[in-house]
Each structure stands twice: as C-alpha cells, then as structure tokens.
Amino acid sequence: MSKLANKIALVTGGNSGIGLATAKLFKEQGAQVVITARSNETFEKAKQEYGAQFDVVQADVSKIADIERLFAHIKTKYGKFDILFANAGIAGFSPTLEVTPEYFDNQFNTNVKGLYFTVARAIPLLNKGSSVVLTASVVASKGFAGSSVYSATKAAVRNFARSWTAEFPVEDIRFNVLSPGPIQTPIFDKMGLPQEGQDHLGGSTPIKRLGKAEEMAKAALFLASDDSSYVVGAELMADGGFGQI
Ligand code: NDP
Image (cartoon, rainbow, N blue to C red; front, side, top):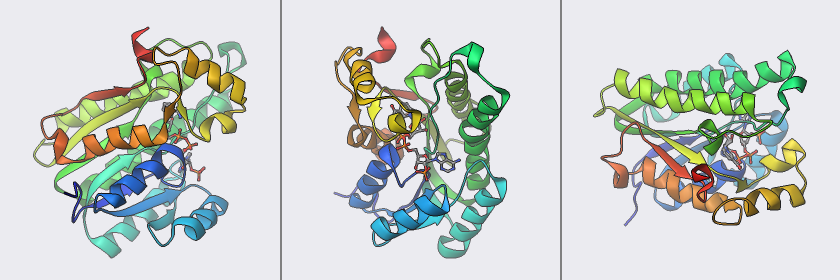
C-alpha cells in the first residue's frame, strides 16, 4: 500500500543526492512532490531531467526572498501541504585556524538560517498531522577534525527539532531529525574530497562502507510517514554506526 497517498511533499535540495533519492521514493509512495534546486543552472538541469516527475522550483534557501517565492508558489498551486523534508545543505571541511568569516557565514546562512526560515515559512502552510524531517548529520554529536563549523550548523538543526516540538502541538506537526553518516553523494566532490578519501571515510565506519542515498530515503520515508506516528522530536542516526565510535 502507498504510504504517502494523497500527500503533498516538499523536498529542499531535491535535485541531488539524498534529496533526489527521497523525492523519488516519496513519489513512488504516492505523494505529489515539489523539489527545489539552488541556482538557475541546477534548476534548468533538474527541470529537464525531473520536470515530468516533480514540480521543480528554483530557490536558494540562503535568500529569504527565494524562500518566500517558493511558499507563495506552493500556496497558489496546492494551498496547503503535508510533508517537508528540509534537506538542502552544504558540507564543509576547514581546519579551525583556516576558517574565514566568509566560510563561517556561508555555512550558517545555508545550513542554519536557510533551514530555519524554510521551516518557519512552511509552518502556516502545513496541514494538521504534517511531518517535518530535518537533515542534520552524525557530526552534530561527534567530534570530527576540520568540521567544527559544519558540525555546529548541524547541531543547531538538531536543536531546532526539539524547540519546535515544544512550541507546536504534536497533533499539528511532528518534527524529527535524520542524521546521516558518510553517504555517497555529489557532496564530497563539491568539497573536493577525492574518491580515495571518500572510501577511507566509509571504511572507518563500523559498517565499513559509505551509505547510499537510497538508504537515507528509506529512513526519511519512515520519519515522513505514519509508520513513525509515535516518533516525536527524535533523531534517527542513519550512519553505519559512525556515531558510536
Ligand atoms: P548534495 O550535494 O548531493 O545535495 C545537496 C543539496 O542541497 C543540493 O540539492 C543543493 O542544490 C542543495 N543546496 C545546497 N545549498 C543550497 C542553498 N543555498 N539553497 C538551496 N539548495 C541548496 O548532498 P547530499 O545529498 O549528501 O546532502 C543532503 C543533506 O544531507 C545536506 O544537508 C548535508 O549536509 C546532509 N548530510 C550529508 C551527508 C553525506 O555524507 N552525504 C552526511 C551528513 C549529512 P544544488 O544542487 O542546486 O546546489
């Protein structure tokens, strides 16, 4: 049986990696899916490749005007919606002594402020019984050299789910967090981490491999659907055990 029949879902960063795999699974499970892509270039590419499956919208979440345009579109086209997978984000690696103010701001503007205002602007448009899933990371709760800024952005995301759970009635919206471990997606290439380094990272987890975007999609589906109806304000570690060592 379809787990998301008659649901409308928004997946930010749905044009790549974990977001794309999740958008596909949500669609397979019966949802109508809106995805976002950040730039005009990635938007055009996504529209061409996935325009038949998804409603593709250009939105850079670090720009408030883009977030507002995204929700104006959703309001006009769908009225209200049911599932938000707030997944858009950037990774970053920089030893602390090399962190620049620009790097710091970019990380926080995208991963923290961008996600915060995506959710804040979504809330008035969510139907009763909605599910919001926020993408954090295993490094939100694990020390990782070179990751002080990125880890802090993801720790903030984890905390948002707790505050929002306290602030909004659970019967209206359930907030949960998905914390992936190292997953094979374009994010590592964007960071300039060669395949050898990616494999080393995967090999250093208890499961001894990188995760797959499709594995994260299944975890996101669990949190987005009624299968997780008693899971509230929680963090699902989908990390191959990386957070345990
Ligand atoms: P990808 O790089 O494949 O996907 C990232 C997505 O986020 C892209 O769709 C990208 O859009 C979008 N995005 C980035 N910045 C912005 C922005 N300012 N506005 C709108 N969209 C933006 O990586 P993943 O799929 O791996 O990452 C998805 C999430 O998972 C991220 O939040 C990441 O931090 C988190 N994560 C990933 C891990 C991994 O090992 N892969 C581990 C732990 C957490 P575009 O392509 O248009 O630039």
